[in-house]
Structures are given as C-alpha cells and as structure tokens.
Image (tube, rainbow over all chains, first blue to last red; front, side, top):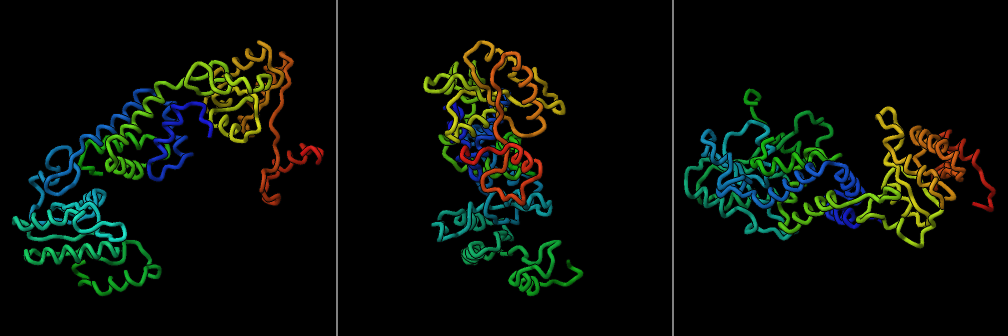
Length: 202
Length: 202
C-alpha cells in the first residue's frame, strides 16, 4: 500500500497493532483523525497515555483503580463479609451492572489454563486465601465462566479454601433468560434440572 | 457502566468517539492498552499526534504528503501530461495499487452533494481548472465513483474544462471482474453493452 506520507503510514501501522483492527480499518481511523481538530486528537492520545501510566490495581481486590484502594473496597456501604471471585475487570463491571451485588470482589487476573501456560501462581489465588485467612470473610462466591478452565479454577480455589472453613458458593448455572428450551444445549439443561429450586424461592 | 477508574473511563470515552467503535470495543481496546508496555502505548499516541500535526497537503494535487509537494508530483518518472481526478486520498491509494497508472492526480476532497451541503466551491475544482489552464496537461481522467453525486461532479468538471480544450475522459463502467452476469444490475449491464469495445483491444 502506498500511503503517500510516512507519518500516515506510521500511524496506520500503530493502530493496526490493536486487536481486531485490520489494516483497512486502521487506515479509515487514521484518515478520520486527520480530519479532526488537533485538540481532539491530543485528547485521545493523552487519555490512553495517562491511563496506562497512572491506573493502579487495588491492594485488596486487584480491581483497577486510580489510587491505592478501589472505590468498591473503600465504600463503607458494601458488605465486607462476602467476596466474589471473578476472572477479570470486565466481569466486575458486568456484575456491578446487575445492581444485585453489594459485597466485595477478588479479581484473579485469569483462569488456570495449562494450554496457555497459566498456572495457579500466575493468578491472585494465594492473595485470596490470605485475605480469607485474615478473617472477616463469611462467604466466597465463585463467579468464573462455566468453561473447563473456569471449573478447574473453581475446584482449585475450593480445595485451597477448605482449610479456612469459609463458606464457598458458586453462581447458579441454568437456562438463560429468554432462551428457548429446545435450543438449549444438553449440559446446560441437565444442570438446570439438577439445580432446580422451590418455585416460591425463584 | 461502572469503570472503577476515571482514567479508564476517560480513555474509553475518547476511543468510543472513533467512527465504528462502540463502547464495548472501546473498553476492549482500552483494557488491551492497559496490558501493553508503556512504550507501545506511547508509540501509538505519538504516531497519531505527530501525523495530525505534521501531515501536509500537496500544493499541486492536494494529496497528503510529508513536505510541500507529494511523492507522486515530484517523481520525474511520472507522466505530467495526464491528471486523474479522484474524490479522496483512499482513491489515490486504490489506483496506485493497480500499478496501471503513471500520470498525476488531483484530489477533489469530496464530490458535489447538495444533500450534505457540499458545493463546487468546497472542492478543489477551481484549482484543477487553473492547473489545466497553466498548460502542460493533455488529458484529464475523471475517476469518481459511479454514483449520482459522482456523475454530477463529473459533468460539472467537464463543463468547467470545456473552454480549456483539454481532452476529458472518464474511467470505463462495466461488469466487474468475476461478477456473475445474471446478478449484475440492469444499469451496469446496460452501460457495459453500450460501452463495448473491439475484442482485440480488451
């Protein structure tokens, strides 16, 4: 591709490095930026540089935050006796968006996946056990994705926490809202049947 | 959406302003950048800021370039007697990629589109006429998109150039390579028939 300008070419190359952004989209975005005011382009560039340099991870739950301790851990209205274990920051956002949870989190930073070379020591599992050991936690909710890796990690954490005597629960697995039963896979349907609850509790 | 970090939120908001990038993609890209080395994030930010500040437009053809005159106009091997009129920079790249054209370009910066409030004075039409008037141009090739706006612009330029006596041609319209004839629209097929050429010239 002949870009006529090495400055444009360099920008396209850099944008193209982003995941899911191909060379055509990168060119489209670069040409869009070229048509914007300098101030807008500066604002975009500054926001990503500032974010990368200044974002911190919470000392307690490893969620991202702007200071030492995240907004959730430092919120006095949250129930500090419940800790919900999630894979990553997006999962914290997803659960926060339900407005159904008032406890704290523990962000593992991934799940155990030998295929990708990720073992327990690469994740915030030891810090979770230590956190529970220090007391004040009555329940640990495992909220990992229902995949093989998620299930393995759930089981690993469950075994690690056994000695502490803390109550360990796992989020319900069943048929998703508005899913058609006939198109639901058999594992999900089987688990939904096995995990049935009294109708007046639902 | 609760981003836990205002720095992250600001970056997501800025990335989200880009065309075709929704809030979920913006979050995915921001979190990707958060996992990269500072140097890589700086390289991306610098490349777009530098591009926006330093890219210039060629004094002759209005293609982008890094100096006063673009690589194409300043290339002594290009045929300066042929000028190909295109809508934008991407069209220059598309034609350059064919490796079939050795003349120069004239980038209009758009096409006449009263619906979008773009009139002839918003485009580089006057500068094209002036360029032809100064002599040395034997042929002007109109290579705008075969849309209503493109056709209108073609006709407007043709009328403007009539007085100069320059030869004005338009790129061929017909059935695209590998298109199936039965699925080709009637206007295209009609023009392809009307514009038929001797087989031994094809």
